[in-house]
Every structure is written in structure tokens, then in C-alpha cells.
Image (cartoon, rainbow, N blue to C red; front, side, top):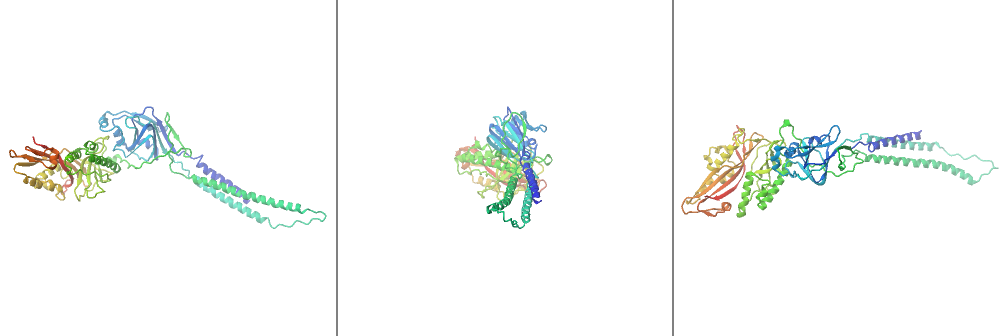
Length: 614
């Protein structure tokens, strides 16, 4: 009976293990769902919308081929569409009925002509992308993009974009019953072995002691050899049965262990890489089991984007912290190379407005007078303060502070960046070194952003326009200015270095044969105000001041010095000189109704131009 039960146990074990292995092999569902299409006449750009990427759950594996160079990048959907504005491009869609991928053409919008003209046709290197990738002839990469993020695909913006597109999503092909079946099969193997061993032990005990054979008549003799042969035959028979059983047990055991070994390999694995697509002539849907797919090396996106805010939560911030760090690296590289070569043309790629004007003039002056202070270097970051404007339109503004980690004696540098159009780069509009021991007011987190206020905003104790004219008047006449009480003098080193006391001392040191006059000059830079948490604002603005030296006695001459000599090219003159000084100022203006004073947070100043009077 024990042998029969053992046989049944082995049969059940074989069935259970077989089914368990089958679930992980021949019965295994597909590991991924793929859709693909091949375009006969692709345009220079391909747009893969977030709705397409989100049409199935899970990570998206994008396979692209069919062009000499394959460029792919992702960003917020609105930003990608804004960059494409003014250009014709292909877009793909997944048919929910046929589960196929199809493409269509989006015509160029005439309203986007200015956007196209404002930047390069090559999307590589745009400040809008959160991450970008470039490969030769083909690209295969896995992303985990949430809703609200889309992709742009191109060659170089002029050549045709990749013609073969394949998108794959992982499918849940887990087999939860496979492991229990294998374990149950292994259990029945053990039960069968135990029953088999018990049966063998019982059979051995039931044989009992052997009795001698009965005595035979004397008349009949049997040869000892025949007698031994009979005994030997009996013993051989018993040994034969034991040997057969002994051989059967290891055979079943080894077979069971082999099957159990298969179960280890059949445990659920991570999402497999999809096979490299073969371009076809028509759109198709394919499902490839992991057991038959040829793995192709893929990469995983290094940045997990923050979900795009819903419309109810307001517009998104202009940039993320990761984006800004990438932008700062590019700005730092441009500034470092331009400063080393004194190349204002190259500097214009990343600087504009007052920051470009002052740095360009500094290059000119230092070409003649090497003792003139060099412009402050732009550190690579990361930034210690990130305050982006929350907006979905252009131009966009970002305020940040970067510190020189290698030299802590250098003051932190505040930058006001502006991006005029989607295709243009973020450029430094103001580069202002902070005053010593400056404390910034609390600002919104980078993931939320802030709003940009108008120059005539009534939400502040004084408007940004009033701050510009009031501080210029303060530098000119000091305490006689009607706005003198509006500004905090604590820690303000600019008013002590170029304020009314400095001007009076310079007038007193001038010879009687000449006169010197100081006057306010309208700054050409725009005032930029970004709201803080306490309803105040961080304001960057530009003012200028003229210094006119005239000859007041016939035959007398005026001798120029230092930077004025280098900028004007005049060493002495009988007419006089005019020098224009530029000031980039960073203020904190408290909210309306607050009795706190306007605080100067930092400044940058230098000679902007000098010339001989007519």
C-alpha cells in the first residue's frame, strides 16, 4: 500500500511541478505591449504627446531609428509645444480601437515666426528640456514620465527626424500560482520519498528468518554446485529487486531536484528590456514574451520629473532646480571663456542688458589698464536660492544666488535671468554681488515659484520705480533727499563709497582751473520685482550717474586718470571729459503698510563709458 501511495505522490508532484513550469514558460503571458509605425516622409521634428506616453501604465521604452543622428528630449508638454510653435512637425497617436500607432502632420503656425527666428532650429541644448539624449542612427531608452511631460525627437532640426518609432510598455505577466505549485510539487516529492522508504523498511521486516531446506532422501543426491546455484538464484532475485528500487529512488529524486531548479529561475523578474524594433511599412501592435525577446541595452532617465501642477494650482514655475543647475553650468562656462578671451561677442550668448553692457566695457578698459578690477566670475552652482517666476508665458524670469565654494572670501553672486522666447536661452540680465552679512527674506520654494510685480505695484511700501529714482537722489544729495528716510543705511557700503560724502571730497580735491559735476542719468535696464513670502519683493534695478569735468580757466588742461583714460583714450584735454557710471542694485522692498525700510542687498558698479567733451 505504501508503494502505491508513493507512486500517487510522485504522479501528483510531477503534475504540480509541470504546471508550475508551464506557467513560467509556454503559458507565460507577454511581458510588454509595443506599438510602432514607420513614416515615409518625416518632417524635421516629431512630437510624442503625454497622452500617447500615458495610454498604457508603466515605464515607456522609446525606440527610434531611421536618421543619421537621433536626438530626443523631454520637458513639460506646454514647453515642448511652445518650442515647436512656428514649425511644422509630425505627431503620433495610439488608436484605442486597433491599438496601433499612427502619425499626422501639424502645420506651422504663422504666429510663431518670431519664435523660430529667435533661436536655433536645432533643439539640442535648449534650456526648456529637463533631460536630452543624442545617439548615432538609433536610440533605445526607457523613461518613467508622469502625465504632463512630452517628448521632442529630431535629427539636427534641418534633416528629417527618425522615421521608425516604437513605444513599448511593460505588461503584468506575473504568475502568482507558479511558485506555490512548485513548492507543492516539491512537498509531494518528499512525501513520496518518505512513503517509499517506509515501504522498503516494512518489506525488509516482513521477510523474517530464513529456514533450512528439508532433508532429501538419501538415494537422491544433489550436487553442491546445483544447490549453491539455487541459493544463488534466490539471492540474486532479491538483490535485483532491491537494486531496482535503489536505482528508482535517486532517479525520481534527481528529476524532482531538476524540476525544482527550474522553479528558481522562473521566479518573477523585473521589467525586461524590449527588443530593438525592425522598421515596418505599416503600423502594428505586437506583444513579445520575455522568454523569446532579444534584450537590447536600454537606459533609464536620470531625472524623475515633478508632476506638472493642475490648472487649479496656478501656473508652473519657469524652471526646476535641476534645470536651473544645468543652465547655470552653461552660463558659467560661457562667462569663464569670455572673460579669459575678453570676447564680448561670445558673452552675448548668455548675457544681456546691464550685465552685458558693464562686462563688455570692463573688457575694453582692462585691455589698456590691467589694474582695473576684473568682473566677478560666475560659479557653476549649485544655487543656494532658487526663485523662479510661476508662469506659462514668455518672457520668463528667474532669480538665483550662487556661491563660490572654492573661495569663501568671494561674495555670493545674485543673478536675474530672463528668457525672452521659448527658443532663446536664459541670459543674465543682472549680476549683482551681495553685501556682507546679507539676509534674504523668506521666499517661495522652487517647486511653487512666485509672481513678477509691475514697476508701479501698490502692494509695496514704495514702487520699484520710486526705489530707482529715490536711491539715485540719495547718492547725489544724501540726507537732503526727500526719500532719505525710506532706505536703511545699515550695511550699505555703496553710499559710503560713491555717495554725497565721496562726491564732496572729490570736488574739494579738484584744482581751481576745473569743475566737476555729478548728475543722475536714466538707467536703461528694466526693473524686475519678484514677490516674497511676506508680500514684499526682491527688486533688481539699474541707475546711472554722470561725472562731468570741465575746464573753467582759459589755457588750463584736465588730466584724466585710470579707467577714464583707458575708456576715453584721452590723457589730457583742454575741453573736459564726461564719464558714465552704471549701478546694478538689488533691494528688498517691504509690503505696503510695513514700517520697515528698503534694504540694499547688493550692488555691482563700474565705468560704462568715457569721452572728451565736444
